[in-house]
Image 1: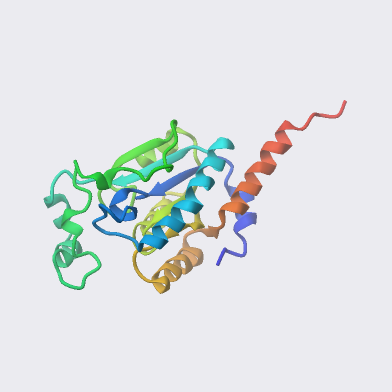
Image 2: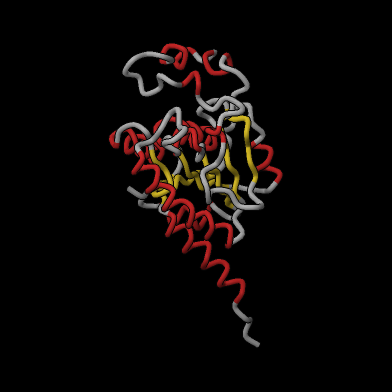
Length: 226
């Protein structure tokens, strides 16, 4: 469900884009240790799409920032009333929220292949919105970034919250359709993308973004006619 105007908007508005990945860590994607796991097949398929896309974007000079959820202790989690209510509740998808990504757990580790040697790690994410209690905005502004390519999980929580937060901070927001996934239903995934497309940004596929950026590189590398 890529936005009809995604390519045009990306060409016009993404002059200095940055990638922001959201919670591509073991706490969601590694079935051996995850406290809030995606289905195993969905996790594997997402990584098979995301890792090559990130590599290609780095090759084109796009900076990559990784936001990773990390809590010093349980009280930082359950101070949120929604999460406190869900913690330990039978049948809740977030019944293990109070044990999610506490410092020292393996869940905080990015999945293999996600990180590059020059990527920036933002480790203090504590809420759905990647800008809350982190220095993400400072890092993006200091790098002159005007637009974001969002990858990660979950589409219907952290991705949509970060897209909204980035939009109201006047970044151009592009959610990479093949780079996001959720531990919940397909209906919620698609609803989140529809909300973003309607009000906060564009849904773009990684191939389109790479094609636009590659075209710029090719244009600047062509010899000038004498």
